[in-house]
Amino acid sequence: MSYKIELHCHTNPVSGCSNIRGQDLVRCYAQAGYAAVHITDHFTSSFFDGQEFTDYLYGYHAAKKEGDKIGVKVYLGAELRYDGCANDYLLFGVTEEFLAGAKELLHHTYPEIFAYCRKNGVLIYQAHPFRDGMTETPPEMLDGVEGYNMHPHHRSRNEKAIAYAKEHGLNYLSGSDAHSKEMVGRGGIISDILPNDSKELRDLILSGKYELYHEGELL
Ligand SMILES: [Zn+2]
Ligand SMILES: [Zn+2]
Image (cartoon, rainbow, N blue to C red; front, side, top):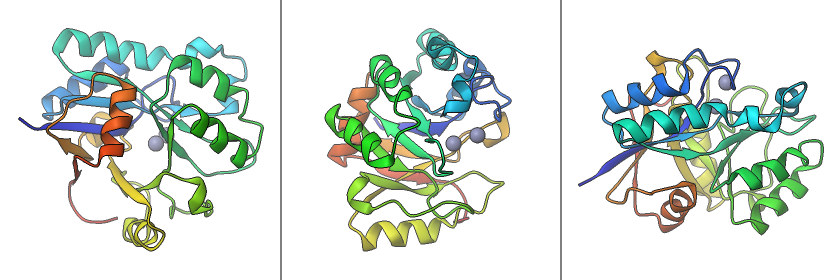
């Protein structure tokens, strides 16, 4: 038995740029043959301007509730952007407590955020590192990069991201970066192992026991 797992997707309204609710996103992934979905809503200071920490978890909980009903695993993740930098970072292995702490670090520096991830066993991958406006992160302060970002409306330069990962001995992953029904199911990983939660997803990534899934050409 092999399982397809989405690593990068966004729910409305937590991610203002997404037009699909958590529960609908999970149903779309089930239809597309996925067994699991890692919810990576945008985690930024601007989100928390006027919103509570628990509001951030809304999309995850909506997705999880539906996933429990229809048999799709749903994992808590995040796509972090800290103040004063336009880079995005996917986090694997987070808990609610971890994110509550990370919220306080959004106005700190990247090395502090990286140290906090390390201390808590959370993996940090730079998302679409060669999209316009991105800057290089010191490779020794990354667990890897998103080699295949399958967002159809951005030039992510995936071939450059993969070459960069290989050059620096970094792992690389694949994700759809879905923000709508139409963008569901273009990336992810395929594994014989189906993690039960975010920590087990992190362990699977560390184990390397998966293959990358990506649909269509390199963008
Ligand atoms: Zn977005
Ligand atoms: Zn994203």
